[in-house]
Length: 150
Image 1 (cartoon, helix red, strand yellow):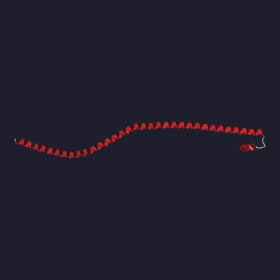
Image 2: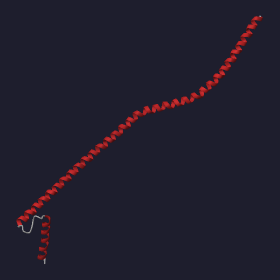
Image 3: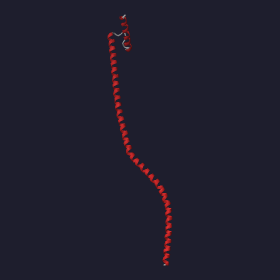
Image 4: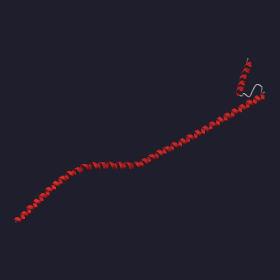
């Protein structure tokens, strides 16, 4: 039973080889069949070598891309830092301008009531000045009259 089973196992293997290599046929001799098998093995090894080479290239490219990505991230961090420094340099000027504008607004608000007060006081001043001048004239007249009488 074992002998018969062994012959059956070899037959599917030969069929597989024939399916893989249509050039080999049952008409070829044993040496030619071994040569075909050897060429298929060398083709397979060449294929595997190519696959390995492709994998190595993929890994090299991946490493280069990640290295480049790392450099890009470092540069973007540097740019962000520089941008912050520039904003800090421009910011004091901007803050100073805002501060001066606020002070101007505050002084302007304080000036408005003072201006109104001056206008009111100017009117009062004029009235007081007129009254003073009238009294001064009256005094001068009275002094002149006293001098005439004396």
